[in-house]
Length: 164
Image (cartoon, rainbow, N blue to C red; front, side, top):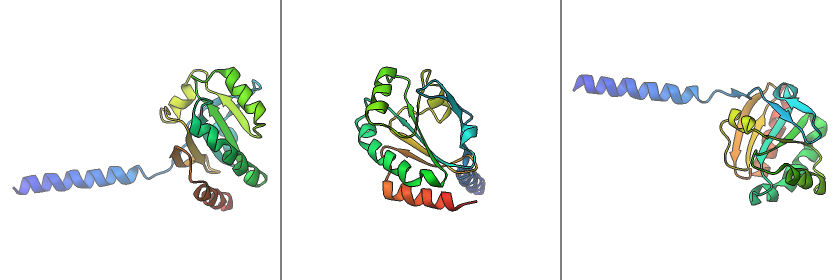
């Protein structure tokens, strides 16, 4: 009986320690994003900025519905060291992405993940929208699956912009 209790205590302590280890901030994966104009940007370019990375698709109704709020969030914070990168999923036809970005006059960088490698590197993103908030040190501090709570998101961005 004592051995069973001791085994349970060790297993429980190990589970708690593993759970706490998961609380550490993950560094944004080293990625190269191909933008609509053919230029490239990397996660290294995020350093020193608070960055929203949004995985989306033109066929995703939630993605399309949240885009005006992503634009207004970008407009609100861009002058303070905030960046937005919208990453279209590999299955999204490039001409649809270009048309969407142009007709809606998206003011931030838009990339196409042609191979799916970027979505894979960022945690095997399959559901859209999936949005990451990256701090000035290049660490992922928040992940949203589905549309973010925008007032909460704005509070988080304010906090992160205030950090050194």
